[in-house]
Image 1 (cartoon, rainbow, N blue to C red):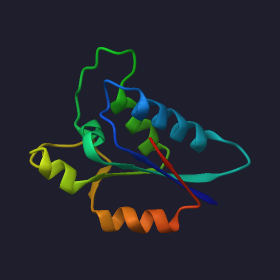
Image 2: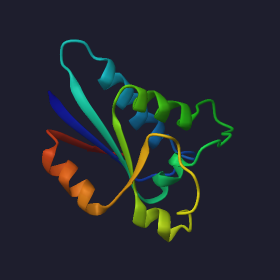
Image 3: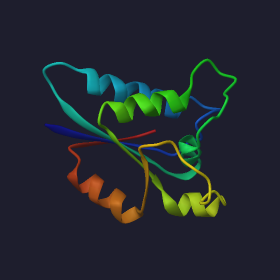
Image 4: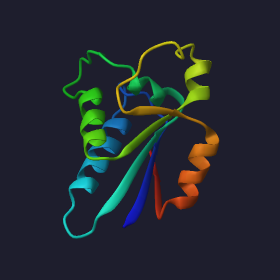
Length: 118
């Protein structure tokens, strides 16, 4: 099974980078015949995507897409240092999203067959 790591740095709304990364991740999980294990790591402003109950003005909902990805058995981790730097460590996060460290990301990069950044 191919291991695909997707790393996102941009905020969930305002650009479409996270949206497109999630679209790709979901589609990779749905591919027949070439199974992939998809992992998602959120850094910088992308970490705000794990905050629940956001009401976007755009036509897509990042929380819903993250929940689909998690239901597909993909791992979703976010940088704890990035949360701390933004004063968000005491807030709840979407169920299934896990706080992580740069060491966790380094291990994922080493284990991945492909690493994509958005």
